[in-house]
Image (cartoon, rainbow, N blue to C red; front, side, top):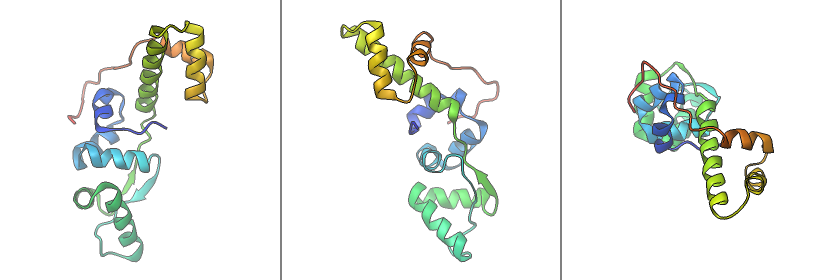
Length: 153
């Protein structure tokens, strides 16, 4: 799975779910990306403090090590005691992977490989993926659908 960076989040902002954009706005892009990468698809209760019950305190320590103490304090102030479902950001991750594949295809064909040989090399590097999927990815451009209500990063 592609690891999201703050720069990635800017480049595919329109493909991120609202929940990811809200998380970025609340705790910052670096901390949000760390959480999105390490806890994608997981729902947990945000601890209210570092000194709560034993489970909450342990979760606080674990999350603070991941996103930083300041971001953890901010997250607790805004969402403490509430469940947080960390989005997977599948559409954004798929688009980022597709962009890497297209860039690699361009690099390989500019270096002298035929299109068919470039697809073969890409399939080996990006496995599991089919040759046909690589061909379809390389035949289209970047996806950047516009959203009417976009949150700033």
